[in-house]
Amino acid sequence: MNDIFVEVAHTQLSRYGEELCGDSVSIEKDEQSTIISLSDGLGSGVKANILSTLTTRIIVSMLKRNSPLDEVVDTLAETLPVCKVRKIAYSTFSAIQVFQNGEAYLAEFDCPPVFWIRSGRVMHVEGTERKIGNRVIHESNMKLRKNDWLVCVSDGIVHAGIGGVWNLGWRWEKIASFLESSVNDHIDAEVLAKKIIETTDRLYKGMPGDDATCVVAKIRPPRRMILWAGPPEKASQDMMVTEKFLAYPGKKVLSGGTTGNIVSRFIGKTIEVNLDSMKEDIPPVGVLPGVDLVTEGILTLAAVRRLLKHGVTMEDVIYKTDGACRLLVLFLESDEISVITGMAINPAHQNPKLSGDLSLKARILEEITGELVKLGKKVTMEYF
Image (cartoon, rainbow, N blue to C red; front, side, top):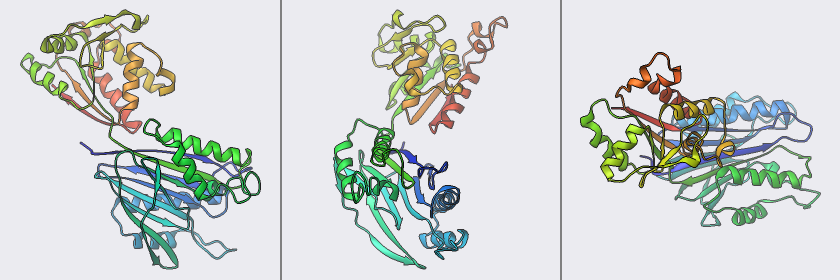
């Protein structure tokens, strides 16, 4: 299992009067690392957007292939068009690659320095300068810890309020103070990113004079959960699967009455039914010590599938108490999800008079898994 999880969010404002933002962000995650690239294209509008999008995609794809920085910059120089007026062919960029052990590499060209926050304080980033072609690149290597933050911003944020609220703009130093007073372990990357861009918009009085983008990365432990749905095909595997389920280092969910009874017998505790959680189409949840959620099986899973396919968000379900919404909340807040599918046949689910939802448990779970993967979740499935 991964040591850390990099939670990334970004927000943008387009220059007043422009439909497209001239800044672009690309994010790529795999088993080895998380790569983030922010680019500020020359000018604004469509041309700047194309320029910055090309920049971020080239950087991310080449760093993913472990290409050296010299090769990345050479490729940018050969690929990007030249400005006829200024006779330059560039867009600024910040590129960050965070590996699963916390090692991080940072490359910056002609952009505001990244903010590295630890324990509520902005850290000094040691680095070196390297000239590649006619570009001076600032490179740094960092060792990140859990609960560190990295924040990248484009010039539009640093210059917010210039000539208005603040004569010299928001400025890097003031943003650093703002971040020190804003970050804490209880907020997520999206909340901080929205807070930065909302403040930027206020400083511009709702009429941004430049494209503004911020990217926030929060380094934290992965949030994990395991879902066990249905008893194993062979009853002799009940104890083994139960031990595997209870030993899992994360939140635990049981789906289905038979599955719940297996664990209940193993730990010697009784499942209590919470009738207050019942809805017209969703059976009530159960309460079992050591387990975060116990739900009914097929009906609840089918409801979760429907909610996912309809694009229901955390804000839509966070305060709802029925089994489907509570299970969806756990899915949405988790980064790594393990699904155990029991292959024992429930005769009730084979009745042709029942709806399709009641005859396809494994398929429902696979469809749920597919929707979660689309949301960026890492999901593994095991069949017993």
